[in-house]
Length: 370
Image (tube, rainbow, N blue to C red; front, top):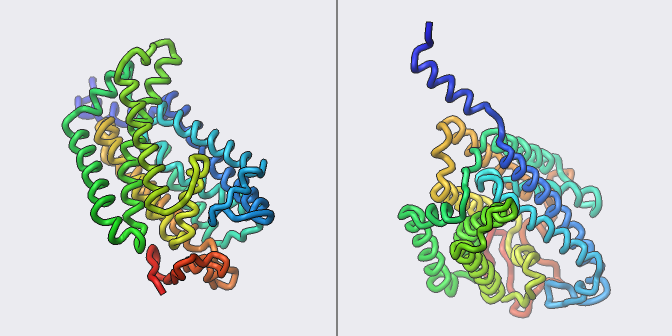
C-alpha cells in the first residue's frame, strides 16, 4: 500500500532537514573556526607586543609608533591577517548566517588565552559566557542553511540587482549618510552608538560584496574564469570603496591618527574611550543582525528552510549574544564579586587623561566634559 502524499512530503522534509552539512558548508565552517582562532590569538600576541613596546617608548593610544619596531606586534598582525583571509574565504563556501555569528568564538579564544598567558583572571560568569557562545554556535552550525549553488558571478549580480536588495542597499546608504552628516557632528563625541551604526550598516554591504568576490575567486580557481566578467570587478570596486570609506571615516571621526596597519587595532582604541563591556556586544549584535538580514534578502537563505530551523538559528544567535554580553560584563569582576572600576566603568587611568580634561561617566557609551 502506497503511503499518502502528505506522508511522502513530510518524510522528504524531514530527510532534507537531517541530511547533514554540504561539503561547501563544512569547508566554510572549518575556515570560520580557524579564522576565529587566528584572530582571537592575534589580539593576545599584539597586546604583549604593545606592552613591550610601550615600556620602551610612547604608547599607541597617544600616537606613538614604537610598536612598529616590535617583532611580537608584527607577529600578531600577521596572525590577524591570516585570520581575516580565512574569514574572507569562509564566505565563499558558506552562507553569512553561518559564518558571521561564529566571529564571537574569537572572543572566547581571546578570553581563555588572556587568562592563561596574560594572567587576566576569567570569572566564573565569564566561563559561563564562553559556554553560552559555544552552545549558540553549535545551534547555528547544526541548523544553518545549505550554501546556494552558484555557477557564475553573473548570478550573484542578478541577486544583488533585484528590487528588494536594491531597496535595502538604498536604505542603508541613506541611513549612513544621515548619521554621518546630521547626527555625528552633533552627538558623535558623546555617544558611540552613531559610530557603531555607520560601521554596522556599511559593514553589511561590504560583507555581501566580499562574499560575491569570494565566490568569483572560488569559481576562477576551480577552472571557470570569472575575471573576464565586469561584474567581478564591480564587486571588487564596491569592496574597496566600503573598506576605504570605513578606514577614512574612523580615522577622521574618531580623531585617531592611525596608519592603515593600525586599522585592525582602531576598534580597541575607540573602545578605550567608552564602556567596552557594553559597546562590544552592541556592535556584535548590530553588525551580525544587519549582515544576516542582508544575506537573507540577497541570497534568500531562509527560502530553503522550514520555520523550525529558522527559529532555532535565531535562538542560537541570541544565546551567543547573551554569552558575549556576560563575558564582557564580568571580565573585570574579581572573585568577591566587585569590579575594577578603572576598567569596567570606562574610567581612565591618570596617564590616560586627555588634553581637554574629559571626565568619563559610569553611564555606558557616554561621557561628558568636566
